[in-house]
Length: 120
Image 1 (cartoon, rainbow, N blue to C red):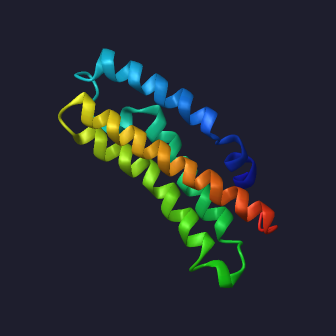
Image 2: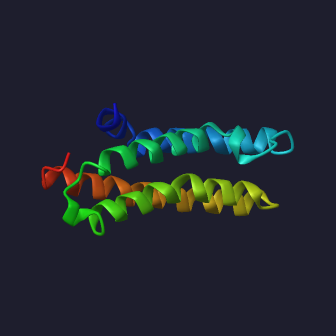
């Protein structure tokens, strides 16, 4: 399950979700109780869970290297969404969504490197 899930999680998927989050934010910010209400945050936490499963099978010598960096990038995605949602203004929230998008680009690059090294 994990590898296929990471394959499906690409920049296009996240761009669509972030776009929908922007729309949701503009229309429903006052109705949103917490970051947990956001689909993009929920998918981000699913991604982290799957990344941990996949990187657990990496060679031991990579646990402090590429595996750790992949995990940090993945964790950063829903973490920044949560932090941005806790901010008072929409502009700050949007900035944190862009930071999450940057973390996703990092993760995508690291996944490609792991594939080239035949870890995936």
